[in-house]
Length: 498
Image (cartoon, rainbow, N blue to C red; front, side, top):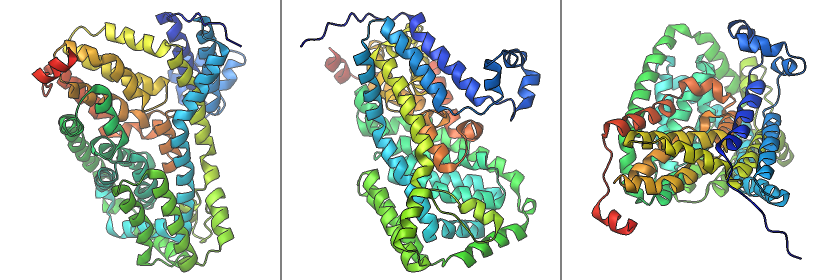
C-alpha cells in the first residue's frame, strides 16, 4: 500500500522562529528559580510581573527539570512541522533519527558513570586527589588545571575522556584546596576543548574540514591562529584569578584532614595509575572511546579487588548505583560519594529530549530557514564569518548537537565562501570556533549535559570561567572583519569549484 505524497512546503521565517522562541521561554522558566534567586524578582520588573500570573508564576518559584521544557518545545516544533506539511510519520522518524545520532554519546555517558564509581572504589581518584593536594598550590591551581587538561585532550583527542578522567580528579583537588567549583570546571572545560579542537584524533577536528572541503592538517594549522591566542589569554586569566587563592587563604588543617581520611580509607598504591594509563594508551592507539573506557572500568575493578578488597557484587552495585564513601571525614565523604550508571539517567533524558527537538527542526526545514536568513544578512567578509559563528552557536542552542552545529552551516555556507574567494579552511575554522567550542556552555546540549553530569557543576555556573570557549569566537570574529589570517582561495580550489 502506497502512502499519500507529502505536500511539504518551505517554512517561513516566522514559523521557524516560533519553536525557538518557545524553547527559550520554556527553558528560562525552568532555569530561573526565584526561590533560589529572589534578587532576580527585585531587579527585573518583567520577572516580577510574570511571577504574579496564575499557574505560570508557580513555575518561576519551582525547580522544573530541564527535560520537561524540552518536551514542550518539541511539541510546538512538531505542530509547526505539521503545519508546513510534514506527516506525523515523518515527524516520528525525525525523533528517531535525532535519538540515533545521540546514542553514541549516551553509551559513553553511561560507561563514564560506571568508570567514576569504580575508579573511586578502587582508589584511583583518591590517589590523584591526594597527589594533587600535596603538589599543587591554590594560587597556581587553575592555571595548571587548564594546562593539564589541554595536554591530555590533545593527546587523546577527546574532551569527554579528559573531563571523565583527569577532570574528575581535578574537581576533587580544587574542592580540597578551597577553589570554587565553577572556576575549576571552567578551567577544565577550557583545557579539554583546546584539544578537542586541535588534536587530529578528535572527531570534530576531522568532521569540520570534511564538510568544508579543506585538508585536515591545513585546518589544524589554520586554527592555531584563533585557538592558540585564546589558550594563552585564558592561561593568563587563570593565573591572575588564582592569585586570590594564595597559600594563606586555605587552612592547612582541612587539607591534612582530607589526606588522612583518604589514606586511612584506601590502600593508595602506585599501581593505581595503571587504569588511567590503560585508557590513555588505548585512545592514543586510536581505539574508539567506548571500548577504551570499558577497559578502564575493568582494570579499575581489578585494582579495587586486589588493593581495596572489593568483591564482585560490590563492584557491580558500585558500577550501577555509584560509590558511597564512609571514611568518617565529612569533606571526603561528600567528595567521593558519586558516580554510577544510574547517576547519568537524568542527563540521558536531557540529551534524548533535546535531540527529538533538533531532529524535527532539521527535518521540517525550519533550521535551514533560520540559517538562510542569517546568511542573507552577511554583506561582507566579516559578516559572513559572523553569520557562520552565529549559525553554529544557534544550532548548538536549538538542535542541541555539536555535530549538527558543524554539518548544517558547513553545508550551507561552503558556496558563499567560494564566491568570496576564501579558502575552505577559513570555513572549517569558523565551524569549530562557533560550534565545537560553544557546545559545553549550553546545559541542554549533549556536551553541556555531559559536563554537568561528569563534573557536577551546572554549565551556566562555569560559563563565565570557561575563558577559552568565550574568547575563541570573539577572536575569530575579529579576524573576519580585519582580514587577518583569512586565507584566499588558491587556483586549485577555484578549478575544483568550477
